[in-house]
Structure formats: C-alpha cells, structure tokens
Length: 456
Image (tube, rainbow, N blue to C red; front, side, top):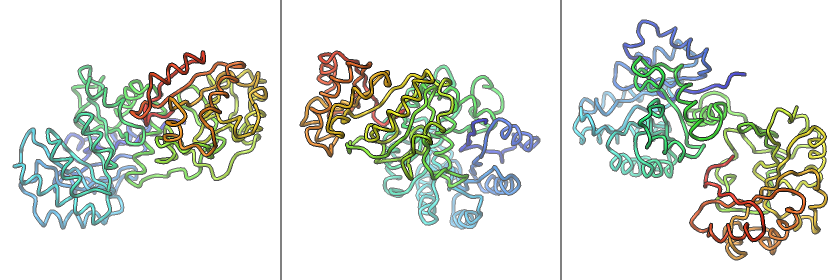
C-alpha cells in the first residue's frame, strides 16, 4: 500500500495551473497525495479556490487575506471570509500574517489585518495558516496576545529555532517546504531535525519553491514526495515514517480524513518492529511522551485492552522481515512477564533478534529475580537510567515502587549476565549526563543519550 501524504499548503487557484489543473490533481493522487489544502491570499484567489474545492473531493480550502493585500483589507473582506468559512470544505483561516521583507503593505495595516483575521478564526474555532517573513517578534507577540489556546501552522517556515520553539509552546505546527532540499539550506535542515514529530507538517507552496530535482520549474503537489524524502533522510527515518507522521498531524489540525481511534499492537519504525503490549507503567516520568500524546512516529499506541500472546504473534507476521523485534510501546513491558516470555520463545524459534526497552523494575514488580527466566530469549536490554542517583530519580521519574533506583541498578547487574545492556538517559538539564555515563562505565554496559521529544 502506497504511503499517503497531505500537501498542507498550495495555490491551485493561480494562473500557473489554469491550463492543466485537472492533470495536476490527478498526478498528485497518483503520487500518493491524499489531500491538498488550497490556501487563499486575496478575494479572487479565495473565490477560485472555493470553486476548485467544490469540484475535487481531495481538495480543501483555507480562506484569508495575505499580508501583501493588508492595505486593502476592510470589514467587507472580513464579512466575506466569515460567510465563506461556512462552506464545509473550508478548514482554516489563511494565509494571514506579516511580511516585512517586501512591505507591499505598511506594517500597521498588516498588523491590523492579522489581528482581525485571528479574531475571526477564534470566533469560528478554526486553525490559522500563518505567513511570517522577517517578522518573528511581532508574529509571536501577536499570536500570544490574540490566539493563545488555539492552534495553527507556521507555513513554509523560515525562522530560527527560538521562533519554532515559541510557536510550538503555543501548540502551533511547523511546516517545511521545498527549500529544505536546497544545498545551501543548512539552517533549515538543522531546524528540521529539531522539530518533534507531533509538530511537523510538510507542504509545496506550489507553484512556488520547487524542490530539487525540479528547481526552476513550476512546483505542484506531486513534488511533495521529494521534500518528504529529504526530511526523512535528515531525521534518520523512512519515507513511510514521514508520510505517516505528517499525514496524521495534518488530519488532526484540519479535521480531515480518518484517524484511527484504536491503538496498534505492533508498529514499524525504519526496519524494526515494535511491540505495544501494555500502556501501564511503574514510572510517571515528567518528560514521558505518553503525558502529551499516545502517538509515536504517527502510530496510535493507546490500547483499549492488553493483547493476548496469540494476538501479538498474529500481528507480528513473519519476523524475518525486520532487523529486530522490540518490546516497547508506551508502558513497561515487564509488567506482562509471562507474555514477554511466550512471545520471545516464538520469536527465537523464528530466528529473530529480540530487544526489550524497560525501566529496569522487573525484579521489583515480581518480587524476585526474573532475569534467569529471560535467558536465551532477549538479545539486548535497553534500560532507562534517567538519573544519576536515587534522589534525582524519584524527583524526575516519580516511581510508584519503593527503592526503584537501587532496584534498577541490581536489575542491570543481573541483565548483563545474559545479554547486551545499554543504559539510556534523556538529555534534559535536570540530569547529570556525565555521572550517568560513569554509572554505565562502572557497570560495564553501554550508554546512549536520548533526545527530549524524539521518540522511536
């Protein structure tokens, strides 16, 4: 099944598409573009875009007045936008914002138009699509003043990390366009690796910003694949991962398409298969992704019930197609020790490499040394250390079990007798990474730093 993508920003209403629009949309569908958000910029483009959306089921519409046109913005425009927004194909207010590069309209007029359209979006409870060029401070300030508690996207992002951080703190998505494929886009490429999965979107901004290898030609939605592939490479994941992540985010933001409401038992990231066998955990880590979202790399991991051994094996299929099988999910796998043992026995019979991601509480959970039960079944333990001492561990990880840190250290000592062990820590200021690394060295096991908000 071909991965599907969502082009969250393009301008099919422009003259560049007047002669072959139907062919452009067909090429997009054939390339796996499931939905297209056509974005208005002035009165004429909004009207043309609404007509296009009415004829093509896969095309949705955002209505708005671009900052270039702000000097002409008036109450009549606002009333029209409000009326157009009643159309079921309209999913956002945009493209709105500030552009201090070209200054086609005075900045005062741009700010007034921006505030008015943000107020309209608030009233209609619609997300916004933001254009911001050389206007970081005013854009963030006005969004904080006018749109806190609501959401939207900074399209074709060209700001710095601090702007991205400020926007994401308000719940805004960051959308990446074709320039990320340019050789001289080092700053943008760095930002692409910085954005957490749950805030990432992609777009073409067609007919503009054509990606390599078509740079210099008219851009179109089917070219979104080339931007997605570069982003996947930069983030160290597959094209399928980026397609799944960004499509989910687009559907959530714009309220389009179907989002699975049932969690998966198994999920693939790159060439490994992960097993989601429980959502229960003996830690309540302050940094844990499960307190923000149940999605990992676009996979819904929120289980309605815990799966049986038979269901897990059936969901795995042929384990030979994966580099390794990992017990992980958004819970502590060793809470279901019997299930881990039975599934691992089956996996080893099939010749699979097995890893378990754990907080190292297994012996405390079961009141005995469980490690011998796993001998010959687990090739690698990845154990979340996440603190340099017991006091810090209790503060950060908030374990429900007593003496959790020391219990974890004893588990590590046992685990290294039967398999490879790697200790991991999240890179946050509260954790003394050097001391954690020394713990791993003293125990004679591996060590790895996990980036905050980078899961999977």
